[in-house]
Image: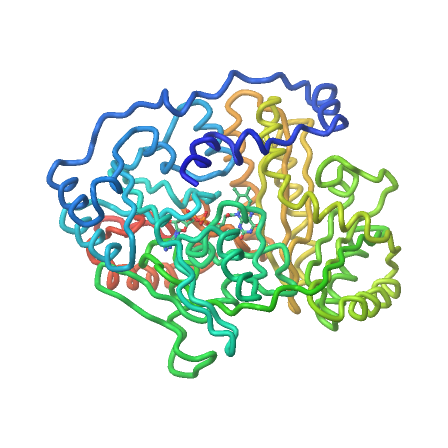
Length: 522
Ligand SMILES: Cc1cc2nc3c(=O)[nH]c(=O)nc-3n(C[C@H](O)[C@H](O)[C@H](O)COP(=O)(O)OP(=O)(O)OC[C@H]3O[C@@H](n4cnc5c(N)ncnc54)[C@H](O)[C@@H]3O)c2cc1C
């Protein structure tokens, strides 16, 4: 994994998994966007930085984890300095990095995490938990600098499986594919398949309240979590001793979505499901996005509930997720069924979709979607290589607010982006009461593409809050959504979170500035 991370410097995946742009997209970029390939990215080994970790702190960290697990070399620090948003990749490519961690420290277990936090408190070093490093909200780049990256890669075991209760205890640093591999040996799966599946970790999913592509059937990651072990500077907290409880507020929920600001999640007890016996993915065409949204709502509210439900708007349908557009208008709904009785559920779902005006397209579009479900970030690499800027943002709202939210975000983006730009959208996750919207933007680099994107993103964020949406449905808050998160929860909400942080992390060691801004000095 460490070699893979090095090979994935300044891009999503390793070069051998690179995906070329479909010809139609490459042609469009040249003709309409007039893009030209940028300069080659700065090589990782060319990154240099002075040693910044004081000798006594280095000695104390080494005493806890061993010398081979404290890395102060500039390239390793650079790999842990930021995540994988498009601005992150831009800065990595240009060699304009945020403050590098002073060291990358990899503890072996929960007790070592506690001991590392104690060293950090004693030496006034901040600690930033690092899972898969796929954050897209600045969650790995605290504003203060002078921090260590607490790389959880060595916490990589399946600790226990309870086949009777259908639960499993997974260590936080397990990447999702490895977690699924270990669970499969017991006949189980997580059913959590976000687009970042190849690299993201169990602890990262819990810390950011992630949501996967099959959330309609398996639920969000926070719904799967039945227990957590958390290392804090004040000691260990263990939550979740029963499947449900009325014993006070649910402390699990305090740590789900806490993004490393309240503690380091070291293991997660999850609900698991039997490996799917059958799978079937289909495509359905709807005349308009509104018609498709109505059909998705009907299924989400009245059933049957497919495992995957994903509706592209007209533009995204035309382009196709990977440029394989059908070119006959309308909107594509991908409907996936996994588990037992797939044929029966598919037939019942088909009756509802026909009643809602859907036209069946057979399994080919669904199978195509499944085969290419992880392509988009590789295509982003190819777009960046070609000179085109591509980035995503996401939100959610109740069904009644969804059409207004969709229009408001599109308007805000188009007003802030140059002409020509493309804005694609799909409904990515559905609930009885509402759904999430996932937007993709493609435009030419132009001058200062990152600053321009930040202005467009700020305008979209303002529109999201004004239209009643949440600032993030599954990417989290980090530093980048922090100001809008404060608007969402209000000043009292921010004070409550600050009070929790003060109690758990009195020295302010953990991921400073993530989630809520530090209280301004009086
Ligand atoms: C191309 C791409 C596609 C994506 N698709 C999806 C998607 O479909 N669904 C989705 O939900 N998200 C998606 N994301 C966002 C990202 O993958 C998720 O936020 C993921 O949950 C992060 O996991 P990670 O292990 O990479 O965490 P990291 O990026 O390493 O960390 C994320 C945050 O959590 C903290 N953290 C990490 N581990 C721990 C821990 N053990 N204890 C405490 N805090 C911790 C970090 O300090 C940081 O603030 C995508 C990102 C990219 C780049």
